[in-house]
Amino acid sequence: MLDLAWTVQARLVAEPILRLHGIQKNYGGLRPLRIQELEICAGERVSLLGLDPPAAEVFVNLATGAVLPDQGEVFTFGHNSKSITDSAQWLAILDQLGLVSDRIVLLEALSVAQNLAVPLTLDIDPIGEHIMREVHGLARELKLEEEALARPAGLVSPLARARIRLGRALALNPRALILEHPTATLDSTAVGDYVQDIVRLADARGLSIIALTANKTFAGALGGRVLVQHPATGALERQSRWPWWR
Image (cartoon, rainbow, N blue to C red; front, side):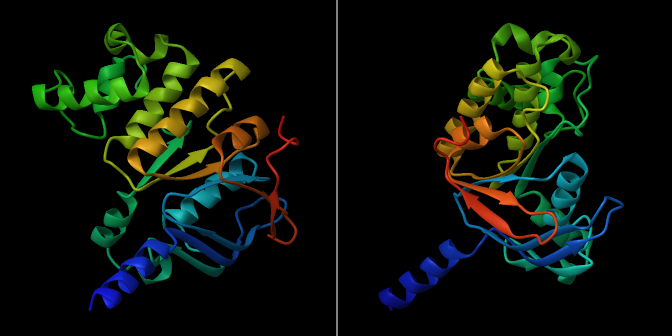
């Protein structure tokens, strides 16, 4: 009985959190988005190079089940996106993914604290005491200074804005993060600090990380697998992290 239980547990651990097989998706680009085969397991970090911003957005939409592939299959936490038939099931899957993207609009006139509270409540003026405790906890994890919480989000540094987006993605305790060109607005110094934040939080929370990036330094520092997508075929080639990304 113990052996059977261990086998079942091992299979659950080994189940990919995300699998794309034989994917082709037309989206108005020069060529369709193609991914031959990609599997990402629990706790793994994978950087995917080769997707420009429009293609990265399509990848995110496929991974979250927002769109269906023209060819192939997408499995997110074991669920085939083609088999999701109701919004409740889709939202339950979506809650397990945290998205970090510049496409997620910050409310620039509102405070950093209010922006961090948005995923947790609609009542942000004022923020309730219980939610404020959660906001302060997120801020400590993100290394956002206490005094920064009261500032308008539009007036803080690019690194602080990136940390706000990361905090919003973490607020509902997802199992995995998808990072969509997360360093596009950061200078090289801020990139180093930001990737350290992500690695630290991923370790502390046991998160899987899927990074869609053009920044080789970021990909190398993130750790895990670094894959390059070949647009014409969709093949993913694994790259060494040393010394090419320096």
